[in-house]
View 1 (cartoon, rainbow over the protein chains, first blue to last red):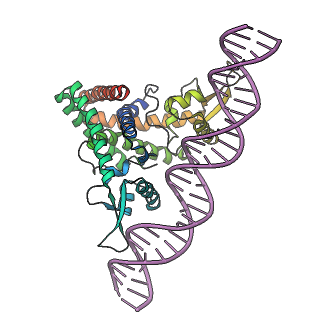
View 2 (cartoon, rainbow over the protein chains, first blue to last red):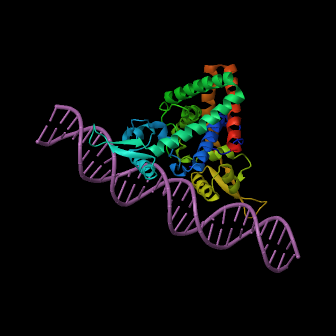
View 3 (cartoon, chains in turn yellow, red, blue, orange):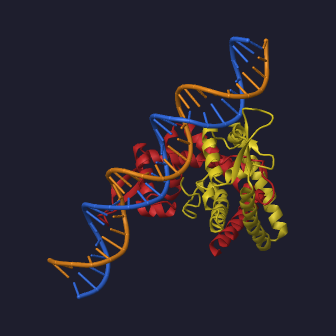
Length: 158
Length: 158
DNA sequence: CAATATGGTAAAATGTTTTTACGATGAAGT
DNA sequence: ACTTCATCGTAAAAACATTTTACCATATTG
């Protein structure tokens, strides 16, 4: 996968808009990757690694559901889960309600990584609040939410 | 690659911040991919495809420079460029200044795709302006720029 | 208790990135 | 000019990841 952090200031024209949206996300992701790697959570990546943690909660999810939410196939997700399982971040447990299914759950190590991730992101977020002030940060969050909605609607409509 | 559009509303806690930053970008990217695919530019993808167009300008760039700007290796970029070359989006021409180097340039077809990309993104951007109003859109752009700067500084410092 | 749908895995094929190595040109120092 | 070293790009194999096709086991339906 090409690095998302690429080419910060090389764009002009209308493409600038997508770059504007991309830069903070890409940079924060980079910060997150580095922070986790430095703390010994280096094996959670190749692009998909953390993604799955956004989905999983205490209860866990079945493979198919996880695949749906991340828009991949169950086979691809099976592969991902196996890698994360090897690294000790998730585990598969039999679903008591359905003999076919298995529940993918975050392990203790997984939760620890997730907690660190939250901490890293929290720090950056707080730095933003310090620099922009609470009021403007609130404005930003409101505006980006609106932009997000408009973009989503434009995408779904088409 | 796990789909960037994954799991829009499944996150809580501090991870929410990164999702906030991700959603509009991811969705716009999806919109862009679809729009280009629908128009017959389907072969420019597997993740890196358009990325490189953010970098390239009229003059073109050498492979190593392209690799640096996208934070990949020259080998990986060589592969990418070969695929794009096959699809007719870019071409390699000898660098008159340096016998070793080749300049990667966007072809006519490449420029046409880029123009469509700008058009698609421009439409979405204009829809945002219509919905938020010019004043608030200006605010948004200012704020996201500031956030971007703060995140970048936090990332570089560490 | 068949027929069909769903959850998951297996294995091969495909696609992409990394690793290691190399040949060609250029730059710098002698 | 001649050697030495750096840089630009490619090649080929290995590693990694995703897609495709197929399959088994369990569940659900009628």
